Amino acid sequence: MHILLIEDSATLQFQLKKYIHELGHTVTLSDSGEKAIQILEQENADLIICDVDMPGLNGFETVPIIREFLGERWVPIIFMTGRESQEDFVKGFDAGADDYLVKPVKIELLSAKIKVMERFILMQRQIDELRNLPKEPSKFDSVTHVYSQNHFLDIAMLQWSILSRQKLPASVLIVDIDYFADFRTQYGDGLSENCLKQVANVIHSMTKRPGDCVGRFERDDFIVMLPDTGRQGAQKVAERIIREVEHLNIEHQRSKVSGVVTVSIGGCSSVKVKDFSLEDNIHSAYEALHDVKLDSGSKAVIYKNQNMPSSNV
Image (cartoon, rainbow, N blue to C red; front, side, top):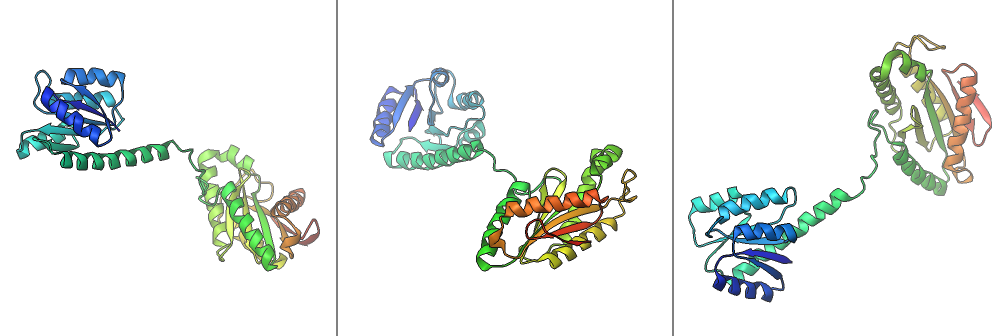
């Protein structure tokens, strides 16, 4: 660690420099506050030890200038003084000091205080490193508060692997709000976001079994993972979602299937999960959704296994 020592006494400079070197640190000496500020313009210090009583700028005047110069960069500062009054200590902390050394300085106390400051410096560096780390993508969609697409896929892939080993079925649903682009044009972004939130709440309320999960998918669609659920179970969930969304009675003047907001659902169920990938099921669910849209929407088509139309709701 590199220490800037601000002390006008040559004798004390020599003694403290010797102590600091014995403790395994390097030191730069300054005999005045003015010179210390000039030094900091040229080199960095990990710790500053500053005498209070000096000619020219005293410690109480020097430290605030140093703090202003350092800006957001935190460097611990220890005041060194022969004064021991409570008022002087308070004045020093108000000026920007972090600790005090009382003269005459003992090497044991100096060592202990430097070690404490080293811990603070290490914590500060760790905090700075965490701040500079790339931010982890959010696990939740900022508008609807269901899972984000990436986090949903992470969970669904893990579930798919477990279901495959357990030889259990699974279903995937894609929920699409009918004519939502027209809704956004008619009612604006604010009401559109509110609509998305309400539809997401309905979907979430219809999928509350352990393992069921809901995500925002491909901008304005929702995706549902139903583990240990075959075609009939998925069909029932889809029916409930369609019914409850319609019961929200959200006006939709531009819809071609109803005067209120409705949803269409495409799904795919795999009896033997190990025979099909999650990606395959999502692709088939989208194909089923396409069939719904061709037939004017506001209902559900659930495929069984791979590309095998099995039931229309």
